[in-house]
Amino acid sequence: MPYKLIKGQFIIHYDDQPRNGPQPDGDTVKFLPDNRLLVETLPRDSGVGPDFNKKGIISLRFEAIDALELHFAGSHQNIEWAEASRDFLLEQMGFGLVTYFPDKPAVVETVEHHPIPGYILASSIEGNGRIVCFAYTGTTLDVDGADVWVDGPLVEQSLNAALLREGHAYTVFYSTLPVSLRQVCAGIAVAARAAGKGFWPLETMTPTKAATILTIADVEQLILWPKAGRRLISYFAAGNLTLNAFDAWLRADPLNRDDFLILPDRELGNMHDIFEIVGDTIRMVYRPEDIVIVPDGATIAIPRPQPTTPAPSLVRGDVRIIAALVNPEGGDLRKETVTLLNTTPNAVDLTGWSIADRNNRRLILTGILDSGATLRLGPVNPALLANDGGTITLFDATDTQVDQVSYLKRDAARSGWSLVF
Image 1 (cartoon, one colour):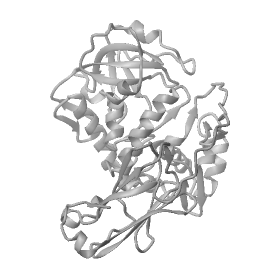
Image 2 (cartoon, helix red, strand yellow):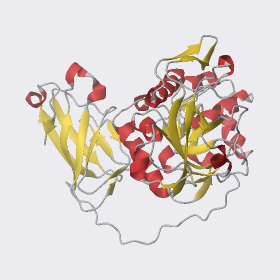
Image 3 (cartoon, helix red, strand yellow):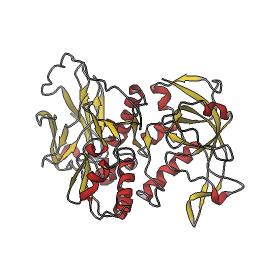
């Protein structure tokens, strides 16, 4: 898909009005384009034009990602990791040392290098007047205003991808994002989660883990999909005291709360379809990378999967456990890993598969393992790989045993060494 190349400068500070300056976060900074007209001519997702301020500066919305909220409706999400995502982004962009006002901790007081030259590959103007884009620092030989065909390698070079790669952002996919680019971003996010990067080990609301939420204060402590976090903050801010009415509250406003979604089975659903509430607990039925949001006012045809010849059924050993780090240096359980190999000529969907230890504690898997590819899973907790020997078992989504390996105490004696099976 062609995106519009727009050169300019990234802005996080106003020299003349520092206390009224920008509030950057993990997926938003401001941008001063060299040629404002290029922004004016971008497609408008909801008929809303670009929201320039008096300085000719406009906010960016990084395509395909959603970082934890630093400031939303007077609230926020987990502040430690929201700030870590912002700080990672600003470091990657080259701003150097950044300080914030003590009484306005989201506003930049001083910055070492400013502004930072860069460019964006922009797709459109979204409903809040921001530019939807992939962002890059430095220079490019391409002409300002050129139509650039964005492919996987170009996405992987973006700041958007850097945030996903290090576990500093969730995916958030709109139907305007080409399928091929969704797949690239989803793959980066899945790999980061499997490797335990960034905030992923502390995630609190998943298909396999429910979060207990009683108040906004709970939301502010948790790490969960920001789109869900924003709705939960607004819900409790409206005076609700329990989760009992959350489903009805979403359904009551299809425009601002109960977004239309394309679900993993390609059916058209709504935001309320992705949550399961039991008492004071809530979990997400699907992973964010498996959901596609339909922008307000968009009309789309939902593609239906075409009949295909089914892939041959897997037999024991087709996907193998080939290595494991059972005794990491320092005894840190978050460093235990298991490595899989797909020996078949077909990609294997690992969704619903699991790794079990000798006591049947399991790590639930997800993602696609390509033909001939390996996948290192870690950390593997809640599975525990005991140093005094044990078994590691791989189950498929039907709970059928696909492979099993075992090791003795003497095999695990050397810390930091991986066992090969």
